[in-house]
Image 1 (cartoon, helix red, strand yellow):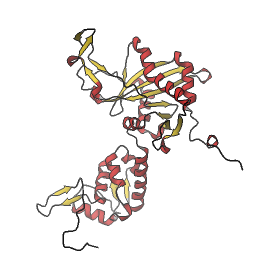
Image 2 (cartoon, one colour):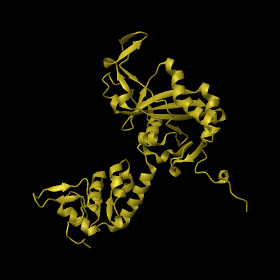
Image 3 (spheres, rainbow, N blue to C red):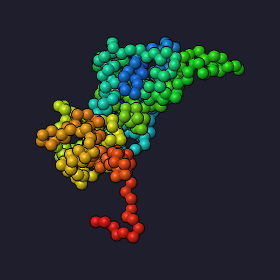
Image 4 (spheres, rainbow, N blue to C red):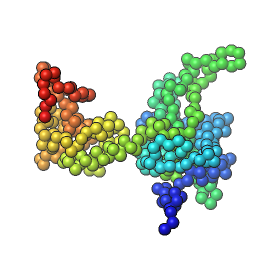
Length: 337
């Protein structure tokens, strides 16, 4: 039997970033672009831009990305699956858009709720702009026989990168002058994320994870813990709700859960007794199934199995322990157990 080469191994996706970049290069002069800002809640806002910026918008968003792919292809640039990534250099990563909930939601709003998207207006105060998380450019073009094609380029924006006109000066030649605009923004020049035909192309892994609050490996660990919990405990969740849903975007809670040894944790009966002793508002039904209605209930449940509640023998008050450090045995005493 002949040896199977890497090129013969079935891909998780037929998407090819090199083919995409070359196609954009072919149609670059016929591409139109719209810009949207989006806030930390992933709500998009339309933004207009001057015709004088058209070339700059295409260069900073579209051409930076495609030129990088085309140029680096000759230097061994590879397309890898994000889920299999291990911090390799000289690689761009790909994952399904459906995996990245915030990115998928953002694209759905732009595509399906376009007429209801408002234009961004800060009013010159800068307070609204501080809530902005990123900017996304929507590019459209006619791709020959394939008809109308659309892709997106997204970049993160730091609120601190904005300059307010009221407190900024403009250096013009040899002299300072009043700043003409209400707010000025230094656009990020690096390639970060592209979204093409249901694929997320990741140029900068850390910035992608920050921009869309997505960490596949942490989520996989949390999913595995959620499975362990459902096997050990009787939980009643609202219809259509899962522990995985509740753990989305709850990094501190997911991290705490990952650190708990579920098989060694207290059993169902002790959790309920502990809950009653602490007088917590986590409910259970007649079958002693613990009711989880939202992420607050889940956080309380995780705190219970992690033994994070405590009644002081000194003042009788209840406490939630944020951080625990196991003390060593007192001097002169033999270790317990």
